[in-house]
Amino acid sequence: YIRVDNNLYEWDRGDTFMVHTYVGPLHVLGVPFNFGALQVMMEAGAERVQLTVDGYPALDETFTGDDAIPLPQWATGQKFQWTLTGTGRVSRIGLSPSMKELS
Image (cartoon, rainbow, N blue to C red; front, side, top):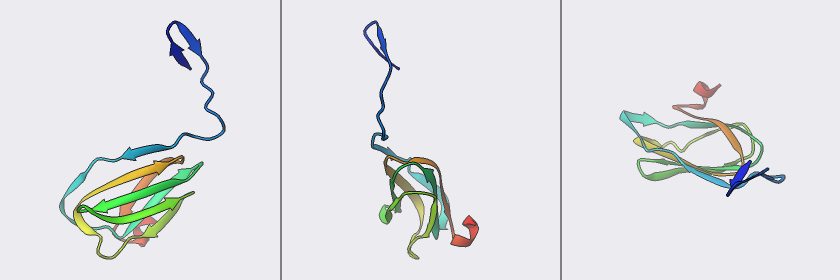
């Protein structure tokens, strides 16, 4: 519902979700970490996931469902941040040193 002045209206969101952009906080770790794999758990829509490691782009990929992918071997660092853009409903993003830890 949405309130305009003293009137209350029912919001009609339509058939699709609006595009959103979420920029996560800059995470700083105490020691270098090998970012070997990324897992996205989501539903309904498409989501572009961008990951930076120590300020360098390590991933720019679009997901349409649950998936896990390997990251470049050079993706080792102490600072990371992700940006999500799309219409998907993301419930979890996970990082690990390898694909094995995600299963």
